[in-house]
Length: 194
Image (cartoon, rainbow, N blue to C red; front, side, top):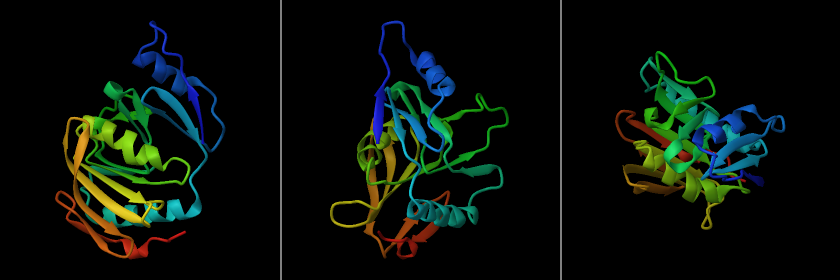
């Protein structure tokens, strides 16, 4: 993963940063996020990464209301943390009149899911949950394929400030339950292991 630092001139503000993110020509197929004011360009996720996201998405379809969407690679904005983040999955009501075509305000999300990649797992473990909690996103599911003790799934909830409380943490092979409004049990034994 390579990161480009965007100049933090006194004239530069959130709108300038977003405009740069939207208008720059980035390498095709890459994932481009703004994480704590730094534009981060990552390669496309690996196949197993996509399989995990797809399996979670399939389960979610059975429980989300019709007026909600389950979005892959949709950017969500957290201006207070200088973040334009692209979770693997975002579950949110579909706004009738979206503010932007390029992103959704993070405050609208009900659940975000991140599946770690080896090269940027630190962002999914530290920077992104701080931004998601700051935005007040009720639930954050981290599927950490590269956790030091082996692959894990951790559900975070009850955001306060820039932190979450761990609601449940399991090793791959165990079940993890998403509370209401989802009321869904996910079998992590279905996830491929590297």
